[in-house]
Image 1 (tube, rainbow, N blue to C red):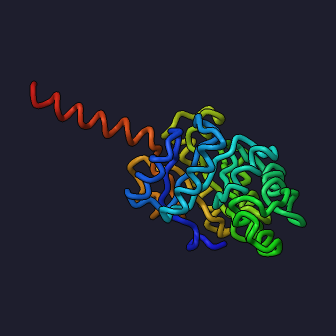
Image 2 (image 1 turned 90 degrees about the vertical axis):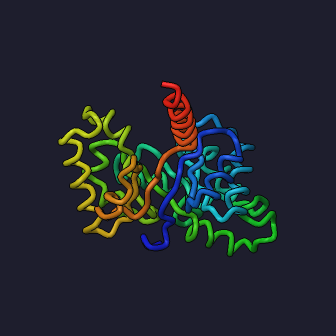
Length: 245
């Protein structure tokens, strides 16, 4: 996979409401990340969201809680375009994520064509296996100073398609407040390492998407459905109450 083929602008989905996916598609996003790590979204709703995203022309990713078979197998069988795996601090952890996500010989994912990923049994086994190894995208999250120092090696692990810098967990784990100069230096060094080794790189954006794209990021998560709802609601209330002042 090349950086050019990675969908560029996405959003977290944290509300257990499939309508969030539809609204984000209408807003023009390229992909969604259904948040099974921090969001209260069950398996049934995740499957519905994946199907709806595909029907709306969005690439549906799932951020999983870990790499246990139950975390990984269900969203992939449900037809997810890929996974975001959190807290991948080193190449060993990256290889573990690959092992859970890919079919043999690259990994140990169990095979079954009976789900959406196998077109409910219509897909030939060979095509299903090829798609699972070649088309499903594995995004590993770098969320510690250790991960940033090893980011080029992590991104170079066979079976890893992209690395995502998670700024909030990075700030917490490293002891730096967000926006601190020391943290910014670590991130800048990681960005250079990814550029030098052609590692596809993403992060979150907080109103600074053009700057991040200019710095070489290949894809961005622009926010969460919850945040967009809160901000939009606050803006409406603020505008209405300002009139009466």
